[in-house]
Image 1 (cartoon, rainbow, N blue to C red):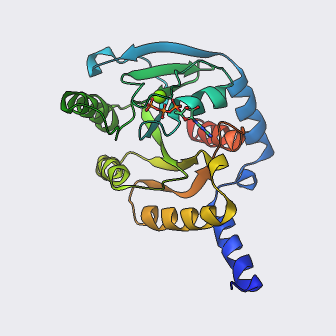
Image 2 (spheres, rainbow, N blue to C red; image 1 turned 90 degrees about the vertical axis):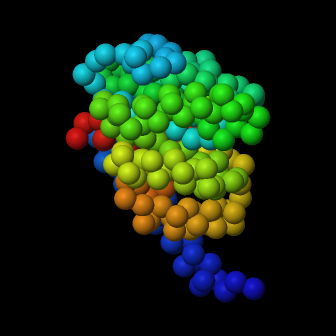
Length: 231
Ligand code: GTP
Ligand code: MG
């Protein structure tokens, strides 16, 4: 049996690794709330790097395996249902979708990877499109790297992290669908995830947890984006 003191200690470790509301000032929380309450606009869907929108703002991209919840999270933080297309069919988002937020910055919905039924041709297209964007887009400020709480970081995620590390693109890990796991699963997940990212060059420290279903963690994600855009 786990001793109570050990349990408390583990709980403290878990808490210290999760980025929470106390990591932000009241002003950051309020200003980010206001910024995300303003105009969210779909701009363009692109299938090649010649179609990127031209602007002088910064971009925050959502990356992760197919079905991890990228499009849902964009809809949740902007509070606009249907802004990004959500689907039960994995591999739904196959183009790069650009959204402008508050005319101040862009949210970018990347096509998911690791879809088991994808054809060789589809995987090649995904690679060309996504690698080009991740390695060469100068407006890209931060990648929000989404990981399904039920699965944790897999080899395929590690491969994309290798690309981000070598291209020196900063990324933040977000555990999605946090509503689907319990506390003891969370304990293990957070510690294992932290171990996997702690030695990575371009990973930001700390882990965000979110649920688009329960609207959990959204204020913290907004505040993080706001901080990055304004520093
Ligand atoms: P691709 O576009 O295929 O790469 O997928 P995606 O990462 O954009 O995932 P999407 O947002 O389309 O969500 C996939 C499925 O997961 C949908 O059925 C969502 O309703 C569901 N989903 C997304 N976020 C959550 C969450 O936080 N909790 C739960 N329970 N379900 C979620
Ligand atoms: Mg999607």
